[in-house]
Length: 181
Image 1 (cartoon, rainbow, N blue to C red):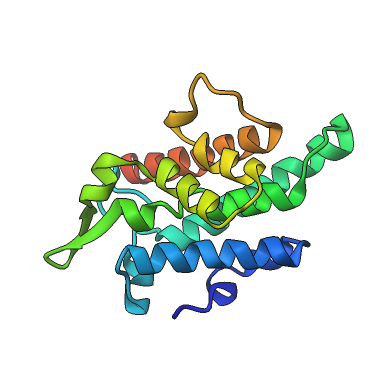
Image 2: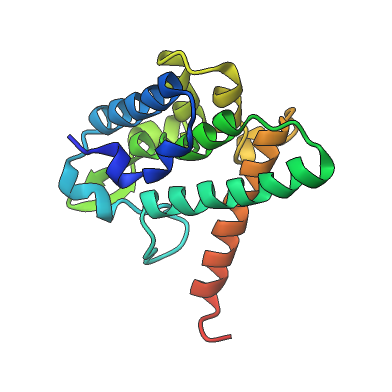
């Protein structure tokens, strides 16, 4: 089984050891339920929406987690916003965990799985978080981070993650669609 602290070293940013362990258990559960193998890890794309995505799911997750932490700092220090760092980091690390269920291997290629057509990753990821009794605040962050969260309440942590995720996605997409500009 993968050593999640090696793949996602940002787990160490979660001060609450119980929460950190639960985040690892959610990843492990999704990995097993999705039928993945350790040699698949580098090949799982963070998106199927951009052809030839050269950033995998775990690098994307790490980038988004770093962005969240960097965005939260000034908001706490300069605006006095009350942000729960552990919930934010746990939510960032788990925001796309449902992609391990949304995607599957089809003839050696990674594509949308039947499960992903029925429940997109924010919903399956939230379901895993609830299954493992993560705080509701973390399940909320996962559930509303993408378009499924439109017209829903978003906590400050969920707002930060939502925008960090789209900053990463849109900048990646722009680089792929308009190389060299």
